[in-house]
Image (tube, rainbow, N blue to C red; front, side, top):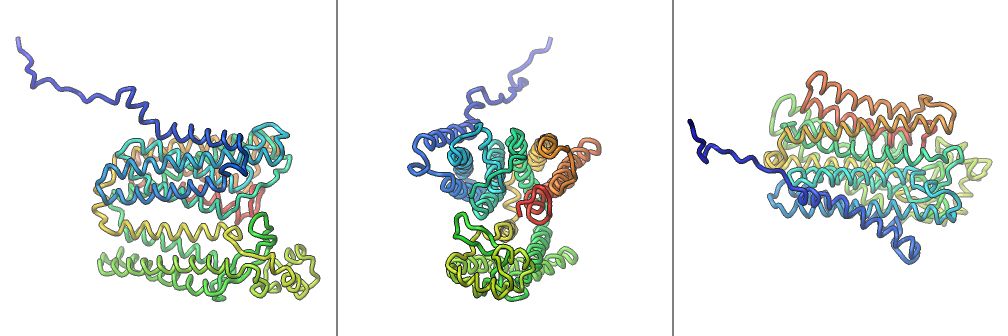
Length: 513
């Protein structure tokens, strides 16, 4: 009869006990609890005696940026404390984000004296509301994933993207709008709430896909080519208004001040900014040529020149944005001389707005109201948001080009990243499906039809099909890894186009333009 020695006995590692599992959810539960307290205090003391949603959303932006910086630093520094700090900064940003959304709900009710049912005032009325909820969904998803320390490097990219969404919301302005009665339905908070949460999950899935490609050895040159092409598209979109070719940059004119002003359907040319943007564009083209040539010839010298051109382009982008924001302040109240009414493509709308019979009459009207004219970040939020996004992505490529091997070694394993990508894509698929279903029900209640091939409806369907393709190719054909990452990135781009591109560029019932 054989005996079993102690050396033959294997002790399997035990999983976390109940207490540890509960503690791991504190970064998720604590921010929500504190945010509810802040909202309750706002109800108790009122807006004039307590923080309001505008201040809270700026605090959320600051925390998200700190979490992003800490997460990116952690890719290079093996310090466990950095991961903890980053997690709590992300959780703090999420807390301020939830509190901002909640206090805006209270402010919306106070604005009308709570004359209707409470869910009538859920802040899902315009693109500002959707944007802060979008960032809130990204913050929640990031905190849930980053509870495990081996996943915390994800926050470097996801928190940066969430910060960009909040920056766009701030550019949009926090003005309230009155919804038409046809849209006053209890399906509105359900549909838009599902949309914003799903968008947040999609953002984190995209971040994981980018890190997967980096870990899998996806070449920095290829990332540089993608960012350069994106930059060409952004600058090309700007140039369709004749802004760069004229040596200037333009913003829509605001009439009536920064807060609550009406955006005139004409553009004021902002001097100096255009040439600096042209320089950034030229350097992007140079980087594109160098990176593409390196991919073809495998020449490290070309990569070095491409990185140098990208650094120079990033500097020009920073300079153009700095000059632009400086010009916004200096031109306030002195814009009439920078507006050529007769040259505007939207001349009939300008005539209707200003009530002028001729371009000369309208020019005189502008001059008479010079003190009330201004250009601000609210004047063209999508364009400014695109420029900031380009700068952020340029910075990521430059950061990852530095000691790339070290970054790859600090990232989680390919298997873990692939698993996270699969799980978040699965949640995104379900969320986008529910978005389509609830949107159809709401559309039938409001407009008498479930589906009308409106531009945003079509965009949402195409984005959902991208994630359906992700799951189908994975389950039916065994696709994993890099091919799945491509699907995740494509799905994110389609969601962003639905979220912004359709809203501003294409006509439809969902247009915010």
